Structures are given as structure tokens and as C-alpha cells.
Length: 224
Ligand code: HEM
Image (tube, rainbow, N blue to C red; front, top):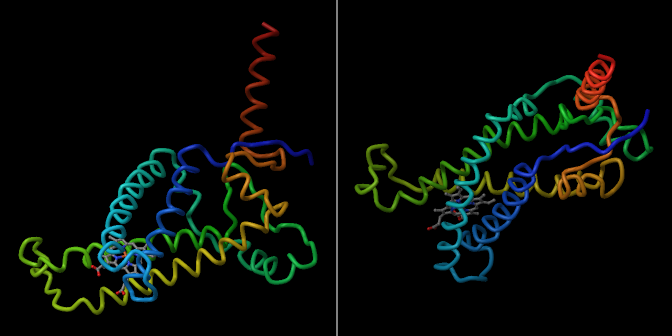
């Protein structure tokens, strides 16, 4: 089957992806200084920078939610169990034997079933946990001013544990994600796609059908 360049990741999507990567990297770096793992900015500045990056992350999330719903792209993340075993088998065995990818990437379905499940989990569990615990963390100091006392939050412990746990999960995700980036059609094809937006895909999905329809319409009009 012939291959063709398709716009897989639109410009906002690429901006959101790289901005999110940068912010999460920075939040993890400053966060683990706050946690006491090392000293780089100094505790006070680490907290200050972590807070600024956290606000930027929140703004990005609001725009990303808006984009996902207005474009319908949220549907790409609905998890499915179909082909999940085949995808797991591929990563555990097939990939080392040069087996073909078990699921086909298209513009209308760009995530494989494992990605759908993982990203869905990040979007509805890990990110909300890190954001809400982070906000509680931020405002617990001034219980009367911000009304958190009404929620009976007397100790930071559970908030700190949840925030740190979510941070560890995000970092584990990033490690696996970095490896999986290299497992596309070629070692760099996934990275290039997220940088340029374009990727060579088999020429048989909705985009092609749209083009076919456009061609047909053109021919009909020309015939008239
Ligand atoms: C909107 C998102 C976030 C908010 C509002 C937020 C907020 C906070 C706040 C207020 C603190 C405590 C600072 C202090 O002690 O005064 C903190 C600590 C921390 N943050 Fe975040 N954060 C966010 C996202 C992240 C992300 C994405 C990561 C890592 C990937 C992260 C990792 C950490 C870590 C490891 C700590 C230290 C926790 C501890 O030792 O108890 N944070 N965060």
C-alpha cells in the first residue's frame, strides 16, 4: 500500500504537547528540590518557580480542554480493550523480531490501544490528582482566607503523599514515553511527527477518502 504524508498533529496540539513537556519537566525538577532531594535554586526560589510553572500549567490545561472538546479530538482518547493484547505482545516480543505494528495509525485514530488507556488514565486520574493536591498544598497555609478550613483539612500529609505519588507516576510515564518515542516506523518518525506535525502513513484513511470525494466532485463539475 502506498504511503503519503498526513498532518497528524495540528499546530495547537504540538504547542500543547511541547509546552506540557517543558512545564512537567520543570515542575518535577523544582518539585523534587522542594521535596529535599537536592539543592539547586534554593528552597524559597524552588517554591516560587514551582508555583509560577503550576499556574502556567493550569492555563495550558484550560486551553487544552477547550481544544479537545471543540475539535472533537477527545474521542481519540476513549479507551478500548480491542487489540490491547496484540499491542502488549508487540512491545514485549514482536518489536524485537521486527514484527509489523499490530495497529494502524491514521489521522482519525492516531493512538494505539495502550496509548489510549495510558493517556486516558493520565487525563482523568494522574493530572487531576496532581493539580488538586497541588492547589490544596498551595492554599492550605491560609485556611481562613481561602476557606479550606471548611473542608476540614488539618494535615498536609495526605496531600503531600498524593502529590508526590502522582509526581512519581508522571516521571515513570515520561521514562516509558521517551523509550516508546523511538519505536515508530523508524527510530525518529514519532519525534519528527510531533515536531513538524506530518507523518508518512498508509494511504487509506478518512483524509484520503475526503480527498477522493473532493476529486470526484471536481470530475463531476468538470463533466457538467
Ligand atoms: C497545577 C499543578 C501543580 C500545582 C498547583 C503544584 C503545587 C505545589 C505546591 C504548592 C507544592 C508545595 C510547595 C511548598 O512546600 O510550599 C508542591 C510540591 C511539590 N510538587 Fe507540585 N504542583 C503542581 C504540579 C506538579 C507536577 C506536575 C510535579 C511533578 C511532575 C510536581 C511535583 C512536586 C513535588 C515532588 C513536590 C514536593 C512534595 C513534597 O515533598 O511533599 N508538582 N507542588
